[in-house]
Image 1 (cartoon, one colour):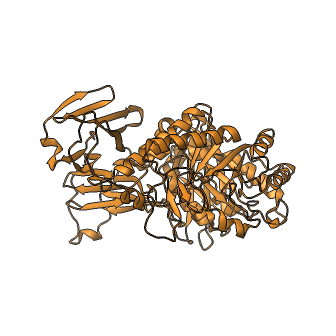
Image 2 (image 1 turned 60 degrees about the horizontal axis):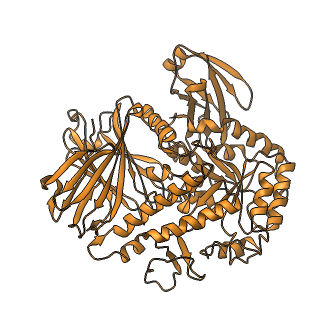
Image 3 (image 1 turned 135 degrees about the vertical axis):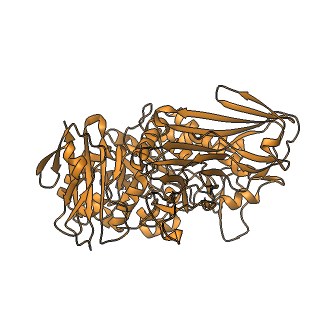
Length: 639
């Protein structure tokens, strides 16, 4: 069993050698060093999910500076594994068997068609494997989710830090040392100072990867995510997206077209460009201007009524409103609304970040955004962050306080999000950050990511990218979303984008060709498949089974199963890619109850077929797609 553990040096002395008092508290264990510095390791156990989480809180309640904390690992613990079986070849690296211990490292959101895919690395005794993100955004480069696995046994591990993290795995003969931290910290604490550092969440398993990741998804859904809690929506939005520079009159006109065609959206998503000093009239002009942020005043040119009239008009038609912000960045071409951190040395870069490491700036941010949410009637607050913060954090650190600006900044980011959720019990936060660049378990506890990668920004991108990303995302979290389009009418492409949440981009921009009906969109097709998507949407947050290994190859299939045990039902979603020579694929389904009977219905042909659970458990099922670049959606019930 994994036990909570951390390590650091204090004035060069290892923590285990320090004189200290240890007291158990209601929340965990509190360590007080001889000079008064306190570290409280808060421990949460979720026995139903076999999950343990710990977070370290630091207090200097004295009237003097503390000593220097260095070499801090917020997670320093050990997982036990059996020794490797005897080698059967001279070259051990040619051996890849189910007995090989593997570490699955997950890609971040890097604007590729395979964002968030996990890759296995063989892990041998006396080896060390390392991972870290880029630029101070937790989901950029590498994602902070790991799976250490051999056969049925393993450990899932998530680092909770929405800044710059670092992980290290050190293998012995019969164990693996798990380490994670905030990168580059070395600090003293000032009198009265307090903050928290990174958390770690661990799930140990011995019943296979599929079961482990489904238990993890249930843990995220039940205990972590704000979705469905209090007055919040139980599902992610199905929205139509519009650029903020579309006028209120044009927005209403387009929605009237959507209502006329009976397209079943439940959200209006307004993205960037709704604020002063935007003046562009065309898509190209607005795309060039949108980054001039920092006033957070509604543009009177586009929205004479201040947007609240548009939101109210939509509300009367049962459409909720989502609005884009990027409050942490200021472009110095506008008058800054608050204090900002000293910029980098590039005189041509006008972008800075606000001084969120200061509590008074955090208070100002809370009040500014709260006022806009209240006044405009926003149901879903979308927060972007298109800048790497590390140079600002580190440039402004004081001597012997390396990492403190980052720590205080991220603490206040959590405070900001937590306060919004407390003040507005109906509010969801969409955490974008350039498309999935701030994705970690602490962010998941406060937000969802409805634009999981800026791969969505590529118009009519490869459908296989959606397939790859959805399977990769689903391994780790039940809620995410994509931007689809703008072209409608391609069933293979549209089904490839089926995810827990979706926004349709067909009428997004200000130019005439983006008006509803301007390009003779296939509205009959849209009604059919938009409603099909809504009919199966909730399954994408249920138990997930990847039926075919996630592959980048166009000669392969992609297939997944989503199972809802509570209703004894589920779906299978499969794709035969454009160069795939195989018209059938045999797969083994997950979650099968051998005592039940299963009825499967093809969503395209309405053909139904019945198998016993025993047959399915023994033989699996054959999926058939007669033509290349086609999809298959099967719904099933069991009784």
